[in-house]
Image 1 (cartoon, helix red, strand yellow):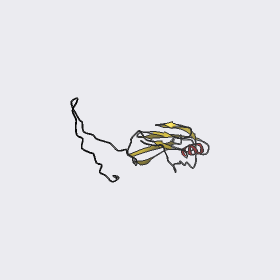
Image 2 (image 1 turned 30 degrees about the horizontal axis):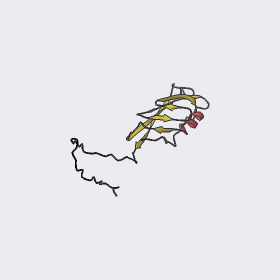
Image 3 (image 1 turned 120 degrees about the vertical axis):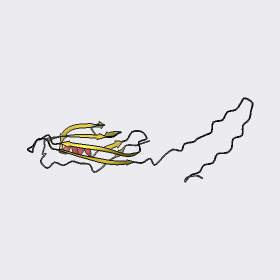
Length: 134
């Protein structure tokens, strides 16, 4: 089972954005991205630099059920060409996460048994081996 995990330290910067609107898009391989006012994958919204960073300070990620291994959130920011010659300027970065399952439930594999009515069958006791065996 995978749980919602907060992610800290993600912010964007644009020295000439001022109060102009920026467009941000967040995409993940799988799972869901959650923030105070936005949820889903992919996520896209337009806001000021200050409001986007406030929203990013609440970001959390929930992988799909039983996901393991590396996953990424890719963030694209577009300044929409407000304060620079040359049109839209876009920055693209990825946050890489390694998902581990630290609490794997045990699995029992039992042999199939067949018997006829009014018969008895002897079952050999089962033992457990492993690092956490009693």
